Length: 402
Image (cartoon, rainbow, N blue to C red):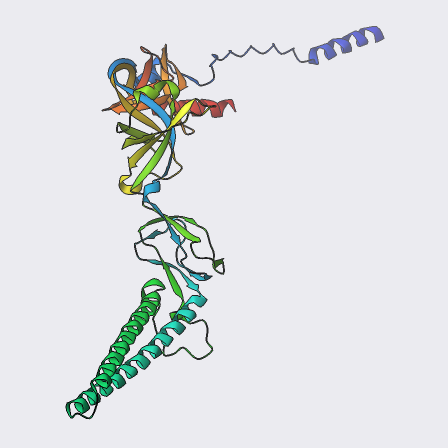
């Protein structure tokens, strides 16, 4: 009986065990996608209204290209200098400020003002003394003439009085010239009043009327400032640099093998990154006299018009110089261009709903089309409509993978 009871208990224990779970089904492998590639089914292509066109080869006027850097036009750049020795007490302009011709940009204290005023006062005193002597000589001459008429004075005395008067008149003229010289030095050169201000107290050495203004002879934009308040300057030291930015120079590096095709006076069009759809017209003003030994290029100076002053010194650009003749160039619709983290890209249609991102470099614009300089070959198909949908899908897939 005990044996039968043990067999029955073992049988019950075996019945209570859970049945083994079936092994999980293997997950379906996702379709592999290459980096920078977007895969869409036919329905998504249709709903996204995605259209592709082929890159075309067209015959265009031959163009020489040279990279370069924009600088100020040195022929339209001026230094505003100190013209006296002194200390800068006020500065009224900073880099980037636009100033007009004749505007005061700084004020200086200079001992030359006090010295010039002393000379001016001395010249006034000398003139008054000379005028007094001339009046005395005139009276003496008149008295001797009357006495000579009355036979009470000799001819020699009368002629001597005439000579004395002429000398006195000459002294007055010289004194007037000296007074005018000292006045002009104060008023027109130092640009301060010739006389002390009525409120200028004795022993007061610095007064608003004593400060020498430093003025810009030309209008433009302040591109450099070489001093600060409190600085001691000598005559001819630079205070500011002012440039007229309505024109700029581009210093382009022309490859050695293209030098024979370029001449002074040829027109050029310049493109910069800030305004990729705009061309700025210019003219070649000078070809460099020396070749750069490392880059094997020749500096070419191009004078650029700067309407609206959109261009800035130190920008980089590409100069396109019409060289004559024709050449084949690749063109695609401008609508195919997309911006990806600041890089110009296009989506290549690889067929079967597969699209790949590819960076490109563009050039001339012709209507709704743009020239392709690098990144594509003739016949390749690019997405001209629906690129934003592809870009969004690519970002969505990237986030999902993360």
